[in-house]
Length: 189
Image 1 (cartoon, rainbow, N blue to C red):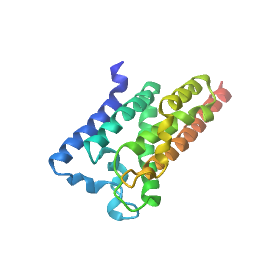
Image 2: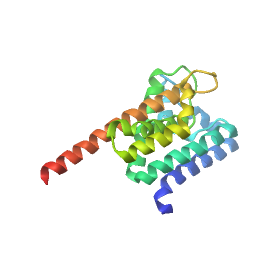
Image 3: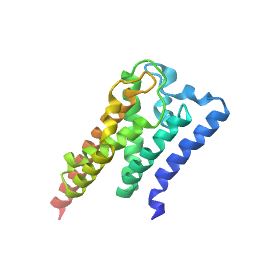
Image 4: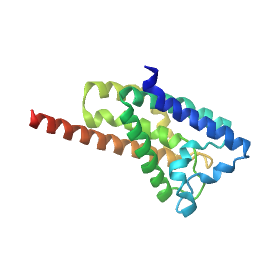
């Protein structure tokens, strides 16, 4: 059972390991955040979710990252990898293209991607299980949607919005792929 959750445990542990090493190096890795429309900011598309600017920042991200990621792992590891990798890249590209000029880092974009994916899945798949899952995600984490509003210059609301958009798009793509597979299976039966 624990093996099913290995990917999210490893991701959270990696975030913490990077945080510790980065602090030992006086924040040397922070330069690898997403810096919009700068060639130097391109590596941040992949690296930014692993970087956190402070202890408060990583503490605020750890629990929702773990819980929402664990829900995805419980559904399937394949789905977890798809949403994590595609959401990181798609959300990161949106940030790089459209965000204000700043250094965007942290896992919150990925957290919003997980939330957007899980909360919108029922709309696209229309099954009872995904309906229950979506309702629970919205009940427990729906309040975080206010994070897409620009409330503080220190918080990358753009990362939150990009992650949410990425998650919703990925839920739509995933549901279309599932429908295609079911249609092919129904035809070949």
